[in-house]
Amino acid sequence: MEKVCLLNLGCKVNQYEIDSLQNVLKEKYLTTQQLCFADIYIVNTCAVTSEAEKKSRQMIAKIIKINKNAKIYVCGCASQHNAEQFLDKKQVVNVIGNTNKSKIPQLFEEKGNLVCPLLKEYEDGFVSTNVRTRGYVKIQDGCNNYCSYCLIPYLRGFSRSRKLDSIVKEATILSNSCKEIVLTGIDVSDYRINGERAIGKVLYALKDLPCRIRLSSMEVSIIDDEFLKIVSSMKNFCPHFHLSLQSGCDKTLKDMNRHYTTELYLQKVNLIRSYFDNPAITTDIIVGYPTESEKDFETTLNFVDKVKFSNVHFFAYSSREGTRASKLPQINGNIIKLREDRLKKVVQKNKIEYLKSNLNKTFEVLIEKKEGDFYEGFSQNYIKCYLPCGKPNQIVTCVAKDVYKSGLRCELIK
Image (cartoon, rainbow, N blue to C red; front, side):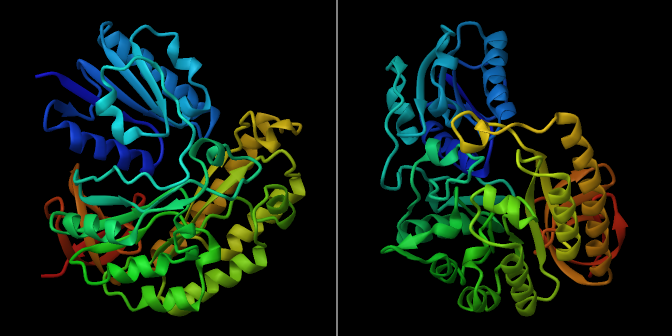
């Protein structure tokens, strides 16, 4: 029996797609997601930054070192962006792009560049039953935002939504074997039914499942009373809101083609906090966007400190050819590094404050693994918890005792 190695680079959507492909292939092949010797390799690439695209090329080189006679199939955003960068290796049999990924097993005998036009309808050929401690369900693909720094709309196409009954069916199956499900997509906030935004309807349809439900990154545009009434009434909803920000400066947000102001963003955060007791509010920040002046960055620092995020994922701006921002004069990398260091201090200060605000509180923690002397897992509000005992894929009740490493040391409640 031939062995297929499936390798993922990039986002949770990519991981979902690789899991789904493995689910199909395991009936006829030995499969693994660990880089090792295999007959066939499927690489789901990423192009969100130039570094991610470089890592995609490096993965091909690593595979060839392991097996110079490998058959390699390349899919994903980096191959959609530039198929030619992979076709110079004789081991690369097929470059597929982002369309028809679910049909890769049917293409094992095909050869060449099969990058197709992007789809206008949701491709519902993926179903993942590969469960770790949490399962992922993809509900949407594509993006209509066209932020000035981002290639993804050009590589994933327009926003398109999966049918609700298909989502519920997959989530119901997953709920029988995992303790938490994350709804994911390129822009889950734009999930629609008959043209109307309907992410709240998706969540409501999953309210009775016997597992926790968590949303991946979302836009502030979906935060309103109607949405919050739904999620706050759900016993299984995890109060963790990853609200995409990118900059805390209105001028920079406008340059980025982000369609909100910091005032509106803060209003939405305060609305969430009026419905939930100490919810986790996390975000993304791009440091060093081409038009970001020193004053603009100071404004972002002050806004981040004002919001009091529980955590922030920040990264240096990466110029992507084909975007509007790539045509602008770029900021020196040393200046960006200094800004990142300053932001890191503010982020860490607020993270510690948030962790301390959760001391002596009771949590339901989903244990993921044992690392050293502790079992590690996450609370509903996405705090990393360290416990003295337990087992993976088990939810335990505990109380937070003190700040430890990147989270809280907890004690079990008998």
